[in-house]
Length: 170
Image 1 (cartoon, one colour):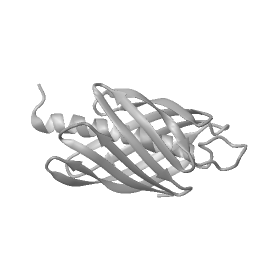
Image 2: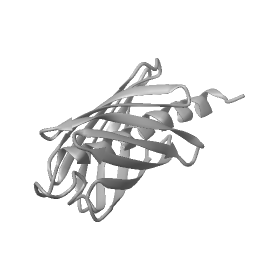
Image 3: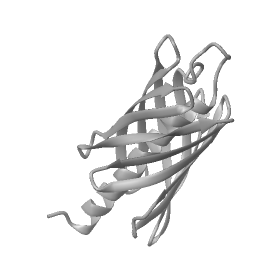
Image 4: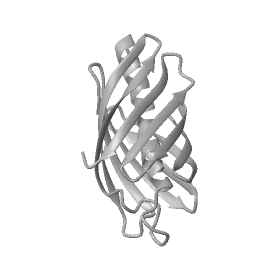
């Protein structure tokens, strides 16, 4: 059995794993050019911070992400590492774009969690649904070439919302 702290860590990891899927998919909303795939231009490192809104208040998180994009710009692998005073998690995401539709998978490597993601992207906005391991969330991303704002809303009673802002080139 997990104690309360371990359960809280698993829930946060699931939410943040959803965040990873969201951030990965947010890249769909930005194209480097009309002929390039939606992930073109996002290769490299991103850093930022945000907060987790829990039933006990808010906690700050710090995040860094690295993106690997295939030569067509239609396939992306992302590694997201986030930490706070209470939590640390690492999420790896694989996302493929087909037109304005995206799909893929995620895994949270420190807690052996995994799941799927799907959604749509248009005009610098991304909306997705993530699920896996009994966890579901809705994700919204507003993106520009060097800045991403991510919001994750869950139905969980102890973790209500996760928000983060990432900047390219961190």
